Figure 1 (cartoon, rainbow, N blue to C red):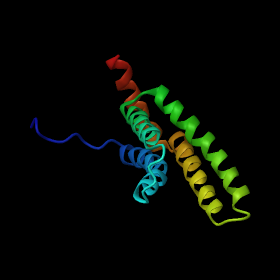
Figure 2: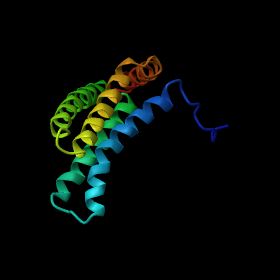
Figure 3: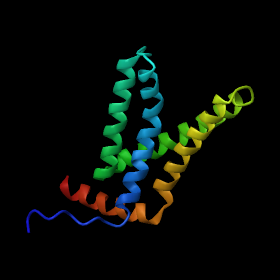
Length: 133
C-alpha cells in the first residue's frame, strides 16, 4: 500500500494548530489593511508574512533553531504587544485588541514549550531532522 497516508503522530494536530494560529495572528492585521485598500509598505509586509510562514514550516519540519526563534519571538513580542496594548487600552478599545493579540502570541509560544504532546511530536521531528543532515 504505497498510496496510504502517513499516520498522524501524537501532538501533530496540536503543533500544527499552534503554528497556524501564530501565522494567522500575524497575517490578519496585514490582510485587513489590504482589504481596506491600504497598500503602503505592502512589499515589506508580504516579505514578513512569507518569512514567518517559512520559519513556522521549518519548525514543523524539525529545525531546533527555527523552534527557538519562534519561541523567542512569540513570547518576547507577545509581552511587548500586551504591554503596549495595556497602555493604549486606557484610552481606546483598540488597545485591548492589541493586548489580546499579545496574549495569543505568548500563549502559543508557551504551549509550544510546555505541552507534552507538542514536545513529543517535536522530539520525533528533531530526531528525523538530525538523521537527514
